[in-house]
Every structure is written in structure tokens, then in C-alpha cells.
Image (spheres, rainbow, N blue to C red):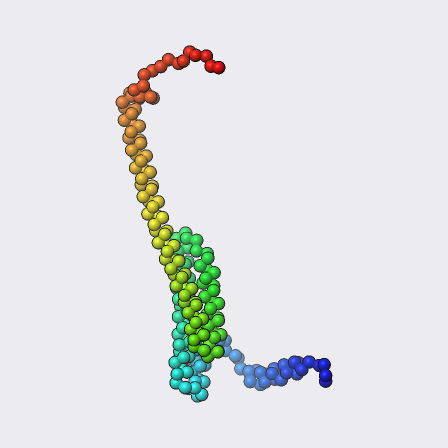
Length: 195
């Protein structure tokens, strides 16, 4: 048997075990509801049987933080969309929000390492990004408001200036009797030859 690969034999063995255990049942799609200690929680079932009480607390922490990250991401996404409806260009923030989605996936994978510090560090990175997105959105909305006020003030100023100039032109026309040039004396055209 020298030189032959044993992977096909190992793969057949594991497929046989898989078929025996899962072949007759539908495997449920994973969700965040499987975390924590609520109904349908996979963590709680094992922790109640084999774990310590703090294991359920940690599982609930994982659940709450993953849901918090998702909820805050949705809120930030809605705020960015509302700002874009006002005409603001916040396309760069969509990349940051997509990065938070990646952090969610990474956080879910960190759960399986059972390392609370690493999990919190990962989720904290996403929450920090969301804070920056909220701040950038708020600043953009504030700047948009200032620009609208500035536009209103400048439009008002230009309109006022045009009105004053119109009144001044009427006054000059009245003083001059409607003649162009106002009080300037009439001159005869020059008789000098052009060179």
C-alpha cells in the first residue's frame, strides 16, 4: 500500500458516520437564536448538562453582543440611507458598514474559541467602526444644514443687492429725464481722423 493516498478511505469513513447521524434528519440552518440561553439555544442545552453556571452567562453575553452589533449596524445603515436621500454622498460609509458585517461573521467564529477577551476585542472593533460611521453621518448632515443656510443667506443678499441696484437705476433715469448718460453734456462726435 505504499504510495497510495489514504484520504479516500478516511473520507468514506466520515461520510458513513455523517449519513448515520444526519441522513434521516434535516440539519437546521444556524442563526443567532441558537446562541445564548433562550428558546432554541444550542449553548444552553450543553451548558446545563456539562458546563458551569458561568458558561450560560458567557453564552448570553455572546448572544447579546452579536445581536447588538447587528442592530446597531442596521440603525447606522438606515441613517446613512436617510442622509443619502437628502442628496449627500456617503458611499464610503457603505464600505465601512460592509466591514462591520465581516466583523459579525468573525465574531460568530470567535464564539467557538470560547475566548471572551478575543470575542469582545472583535466585536469592539465593529462597534468602534459603527461609532465612526454615525459620527461621519451626523457631521455630513450638519454640514448639509449649514450649506442650506449659507445658500439661503447668499440668495437673500444677492436679491437685496439686485433690488437696490434696480432702485438706483430708476433714480438715475429720473434725474436724467430718461436720457442715457444722465447729467453728462451732449458732445458732438470727434472730427479727428482715425489713423
